Length: 195
Image 1 (tube, rainbow, N blue to C red):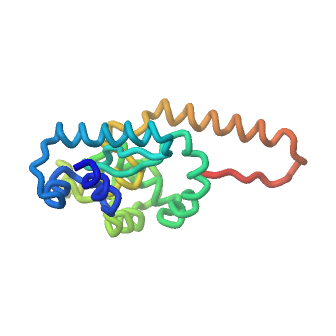
Image 2 (image 1 turned 180 degrees about the horizontal axis):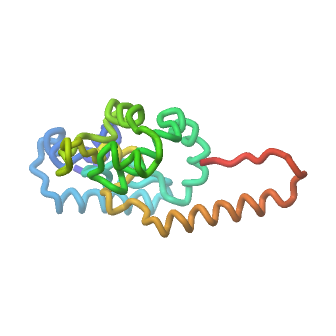
């Protein structure tokens, strides 16, 4: 059963859910049994010194690399994510993720520009969805994130989003490291940073 679960998680384009694994394997797995199988596989991967584990993401399971390889993989993945989502679209997605449910008017108040294009792109890609209507004049649409959003960023749930305090600390550390890296270069020389 371990090998079957491993094969389905490996081959699935989306996070492998319990129902997907039941259907593929034909076994009547319980959530507890699946958790035990995943724990056993992860123990085997750790014992073998492998760089990946099976992790819960967006209501299912997916293979993910271990956190200590994040910096290495950011260099590989950053250009791909940038191609997928422009800076303005990422900003709108951030507002929706942290403020959901949120209307276009509320997004515009926070950003100062119309979010129409970004919302359209995010809806097309399935990262956000209409989650209802606001109880305000005109009953504008409200938007929230989807499982595809969680999958894109490797999050199990919205509770895994970094808190604003953590983001500030990360940005401060990045600024400090960029400053320290730049102290040994010539005035006016370009710097190269990722993300």
